[in-house]
Image 1 (cartoon, one colour):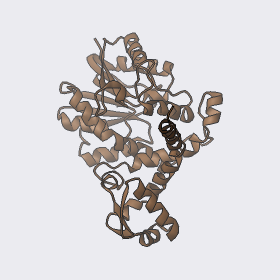
Image 2: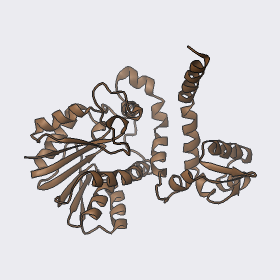
Image 3: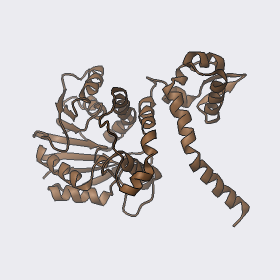
Image 4: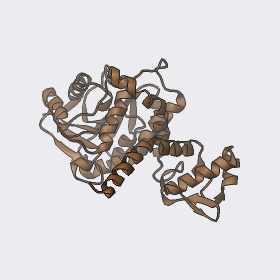
Length: 338
């Protein structure tokens, strides 16, 4: 083994070990709204005053952000890089600030990984419900990541014959909004918890779709979905639950669909024996520390659930920019009810 090989191995381990440090740099910058104050060239002293930080500490923080390509630095002044301008400004074209705030809330829970590994389940907080701020970060974060994904689904599937959509665990309604905009004859029902739906209403009203999108509050593990739908969409839901709950969910989707209706299950699906993409397996541990029984599932498992529920054989579609399945973070399984 050459010294070069050993050096590369050590650098790889260093990168893994230091990951939590860089995540804290990013989280704190987003939380303090740093990138709003660096839209244009600005000094570290001026930024420190704006965010109420120590001047020396702020200069160190801005240098760290610049070293990661999130800021540009010139003559002691800083401004947003293209990445920050596109993704780290609230309201930017590809705004990711909500989802990053949501990930920051997971910091303390990830600190309980050892306990979760010993017990096999997440360490549930005494306070079962999220604060209003934490809930909004999560739900709006789903909009951050869902906009591009919704467009990829529309490119991958012909939904033009679908007129009555049920979006289960709809969150901010991002997918239903995109589908309805693309197909003017489609109407949608957003199914989610009572405290989530007001955020969805804001998004629907901003999109001007109040007359075509309705709401149904409930618990997706127990409550009725209704009936007569020709499209049911289940996005990033199954990873929160155990296999038995997901089997029952798929069966209830089957019962809520009309004959010929389509079920789309989108999630971080992997093939048996796969160890790529790494994101999916890190996400499995994220479910371990945050839920009672969440996990990621294989394509074969989802196929079994839908087959047992009475669906016809289906098809998988990769949704990441790379079309090869193993380089995709997200895949969807599409089946129809005979």
